[in-house]
Figure 1 (tube, rainbow, N blue to C red):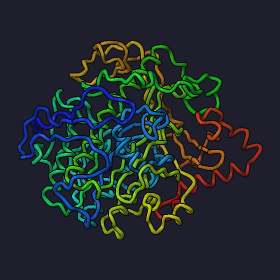
Figure 2: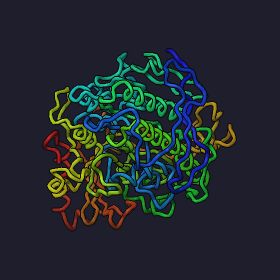
Figure 3: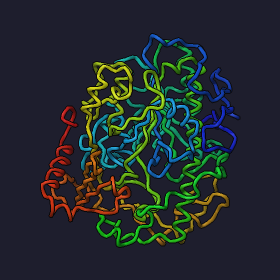
Figure 4: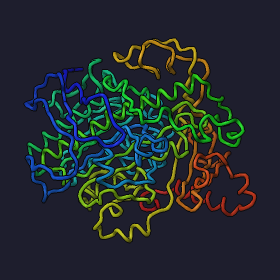
Length: 592
């Protein structure tokens, strides 16, 4: 592979306040070499007030679209939006996108794990319409998705082929990459700096169409001086500047996908010790799900009922992980601000939509799982969705329940695409543009007829135990990745990597589920499980465990009332089962 030092960091002073700060300088590329004539970029963080005319006047063109996607960013535990009080690791994003755009308060992912969720977002299709029996590709990390239905069939292809957009992907794509099959960038992408998540420190990327930004076609390997989020941010900014400068009338789409806040939660070195004194010292613990008793978990599925109680060692590690996750998000905040500011300086911000969400949520001690996702509960399925741009009322709140499968049709409607000729399957999701845009012709009709339910679907991947004792692997942050919570002194034993004692499983083969989550008066969450594995095929035709929660009064999913309700109101259970299987069988226009 080829490598060239380029765009080493997006860097700001290692301090942050819980409220949106005054504009502060952002420095790009403090040391690098590059072939392009784009020299060091210096910008000032701005707001959606008066905007400079810059180099472009796009008033009469299709809007630009920037899509930010983080990884594992929780909403229910306080890590995203709406914020829990004033504390947030992303104050600039709060100011630029939340305060000046729309916040969806009931945004859910269809599948709470990386590869399926990202595949669903790209295609607008549900898992049962993308899945295959067995694994796709060289490892389990395809997670039962048939990527031949994804690679060349994303909404990005329609943006390019049906509307003439310049398109670029920067950051995490899918856990199984086209390069695993000796393929280049999927159909629809002009610029490609992509990986399956990779490393925070010394990252590597597959590259195509970014040679003039210093990244030769093929691949690029960083060194320990290179931080993934900074590379992704700087290349995104440089590419946007390039495409607007080359043709100010051509709209662009930028897909910006940092690894944060995914395991192993490596903050940029300049944020390694950052922690505002007003921020919480631990993840939320004042709830019955955190370090839950055996009795409170006895009617829950699979390994949840048998997980041991969290020890002091586990609790300390979880708190350290919580803090490092917020620190990784500080760099994402820098990237979002930098991209927004570049659009502002180029004079295109008023003709640009910014969307920001996560591929799923996260757990930190809930039901005694040290970390990860994969579960049907709100902390794993509920995420943020912020959208800012022309026609959106600043500070608006949208309560209708939406899913990540709605992103693709929404983006194409915002782009003005009314007929798709690109090779895409019909969307299972629906455009939320009528809910977003104040003057949309279908605003009232859509709001009145919008679904009141979301649907979840998941298939077991692996047990994924997290162990916290007898840790023997030595790490050396910041020169390399570390699977430890305490990064202040390395090596140490406050880790989960290389450990084999005091283990907490994440899931078992019973964790295959289909479920509906309703926005009714009781906040119904109804779940059907079937033990087995999609490696040999699984169609939820031999369901063996059920959950029913009324989340309006049971926010933390403690009281599984299925056994009570099935005896007292069998008709309700029958109706819920029929509904969940109708969702499971839907495709295209038959999906609610």
